[in-house]
Length: 194
Image (cartoon, rainbow, N blue to C red; front, side):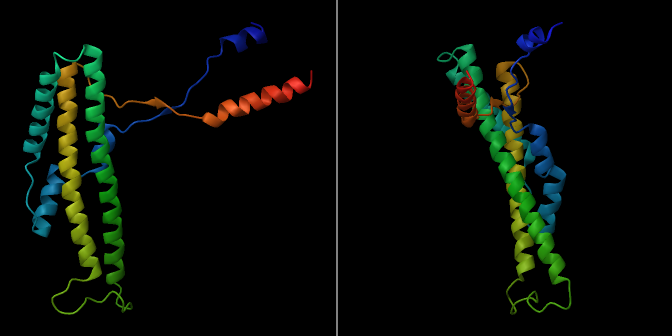
């Protein structure tokens, strides 16, 4: 094959902006067992994980049912994609925030364990140390991330029920507005050569 034939057949590759998946949420947010352990360790309420998941699944299925007559099949799929994507995005953001809170709690706890540091000594009687406050904050964030994970899992299950196929994150093409300008500039420069 000639070089020109190869160059005509090459397809333009459009990079895609990857969406957040359910697996990413599961890696970032605590599961039911970990959330239960955190609740018990910090004296926080134990969440009804299955109840949160089931309620969100039911809520979205009922919402889709109410919209069924007003939306065509493709419109319903787009709407459901957006709804589920917002639940998934929210859970992933909470999971990332939780991860940062845990890192800060670990750092503060490690610093407090060093006997040579005066600034990490516990405060006056009745007040928690900074490290304790960070651990408690991380525990609160764990429960929030877990609750949002369960809501997202319910939304994903509802999508499959309503649409009839597994949910996949929407992947949009990466916008490169500068690329068109660069291409035009290159064309102008090349036209100068004649």
